[in-house]
Image 1 (tube, rainbow, N blue to C red):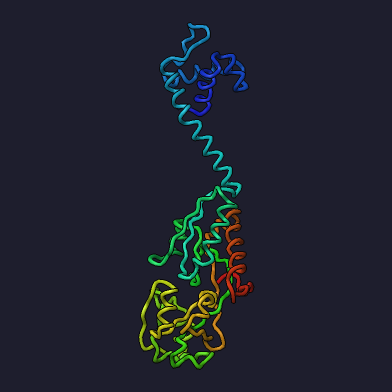
Image 2: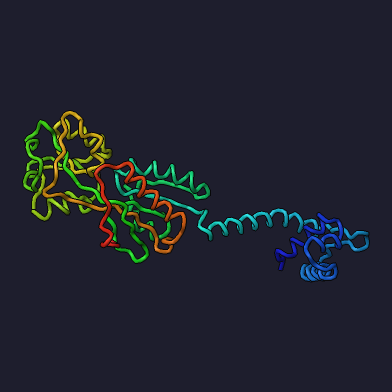
Length: 310
């Protein structure tokens, strides 16, 4: 019943002080403006203008609609501006989840740079270790998921960020310290230290031990990379980690880094919803992530672009 044009008209009458001034502000004839007000009065069955005064004055009902206009119209205009920014890809929401315990090292500088370049995009970061992030991405709860374990989902596209080598950290005082390359059977009598994630998501199993039918003698978990490294250096077990995650510890006393077989290379992916693939700020985030990775992470290389989607 009440339209935005009605609210704009009554606000113009209040601000202009007369029907003639209000009509000029709205680029209408005075007759068209009067007809619009009378039409609304008929709809509401109450007078909005006291036409016996010169100039005509707003009634109590008219002033109530003016108060509504002052509340509603600025919010509508602000929303319109926000929608235009969204349509242009300059504003929006970017909720990022990392499904990778070692990713904070390069992701935080990425977010800091992105935040400066895209101040109108709301940023949020979640460590997705206690829930399934890819279904949450497909539902719209998240906008980007950083993972080395992509799942085929119709609504999700994956962009490769970089390839890294999975290497083995062993104690320099332990029985494996003499070897530069490890074979699966070398780990049969070792304690394997891993992040607390499902076995099916651990590359040391899926790409190295399971194909050879080898099991470690025991498994223990630790949440943090520095904790895992210290456990290995103190002779408590061995751990398979990304080469770049171990680089800062390569000179740590008690630690040695070895290759797994002839080398196991994995790819880190960024999952996004297919509908967001062309959104400007999403693409800018992915480009910034790649730049930061290759600027800061040693030992990584470009992924095999021929593979496209995982």
